[in-house]
Image (tube, rainbow, N blue to C red; front, side, top):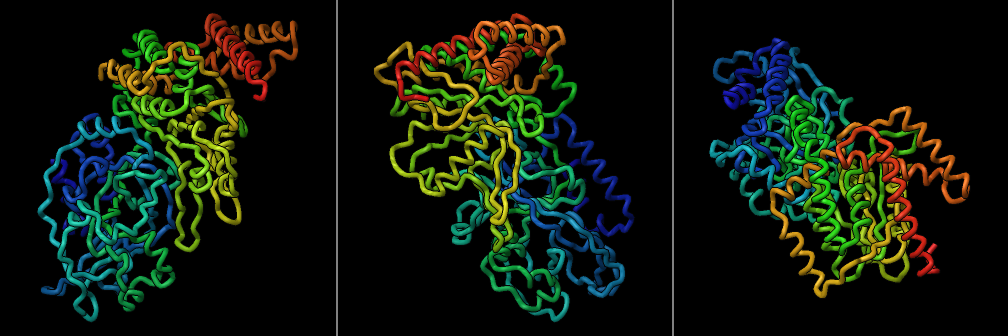
Length: 604
């Protein structure tokens, strides 16, 4: 019933109605249906289903990050066609599609030009394999589409496709998009899909947005529901366009070949998606309800009962992973649930960048990252070798020739766990690019922002990224907290030791850890006036004994630790016991750090 409605909505007969009220009714219907809790089970996802399995002009969804926002474009919102057999004029709607029917009357006074904007969207960078797998297993099942019939067409201003005019015979499309999506062709080999992270796979999409433009921002993570368009006439890459088409679409005469390549990639590789409804994603953990509904409230309430027990189990697991170091495991757990919950002027509140120093060399940090990757829905490990820092593009940069934003590795979704492996940094000279990359990482850690490069100026984009730095000594990067690792065990075979620890955990237990870490980030938190007064008095007392021993920066860090300790236990307010616990573990950490400094006199 629902899918039939979609097809009916996209067909010419339904769109010939010139009454504008149908648009509002259609959007209202779709939004209502898509908010149902079972909607995910009957709408196929571009993230999970191969493109050639999907029927053109059908309803699909796409879980993505807004990587770039192109300039607004004009299209024929309403146009008139002439029936070749009856010569009758018919009004049609050009909304939610890229190509028009044949026989467009370009001289009609009933033509209405409208405006829409195009977003270039990519799969969420660094999405963990387990998150993709769970999403795939719960995705709607479809069978390959066999109804696609390509035709001989020409492109006009609205992405229009017609033989209007001289009727010259144009190229005959003979292959469905499936031939290019199952095996990359020569076209795809030199097409840059502009993914922020190297080695990423999945479809990119050009999303056509018709309403609510002010509600979207660059780097938003969204689940978009819309009408799929993969018309082969959109595959214009590398083809010489007929000069007569420029009369029909004058804007194309102003585009450079580079801009055409970036803005009009083959639809078989970068399909078009006409947005009906978009849902902002607060997280991309498929084990949690994603909407703030009654179901989510019930889920949270039921899980809060076992927060303390799950925390104890996770802490024991992390202690084994960190070679028996319980204090380091405590801080790692707090780091994994940290989150920028607000900003005060330029200061991001809630961030908790952890520097885990004293890490064993060889493969330990890589295995540690793989274990963290199994716990969080989104992550990326940056090996800070000299070659990587000098050659990799971390900061997105505007390409004015192609009129697009070239992605960088720091263009990440909110709550991504960024693992900076400083143990890979060897002796050598950083070039100018390496220095810029180190500066960008420092700004990300300190201010939770990335300054995108627009050549003539820098543009600041706030972010919310959990940064973990592993290093041999104290990191050269700033951090909110340094914890020297003190292994209590020295396994003869590190790889076998860590593999055994991970394999000992049941999938159901790992899933509880995944839910716990994501859920703790979403909890509200407050401090009563009574506890605030007690903390202030305690701070004054600590400074009485030695004013230099406790600074305002130390107080801020302890308050962050106290907040995270409370949330880790499922407590949404700070208690006196919570504050005393935060002071205690901070004292243990500082004592260990001072001890490490005395052993390594060369450390700052």
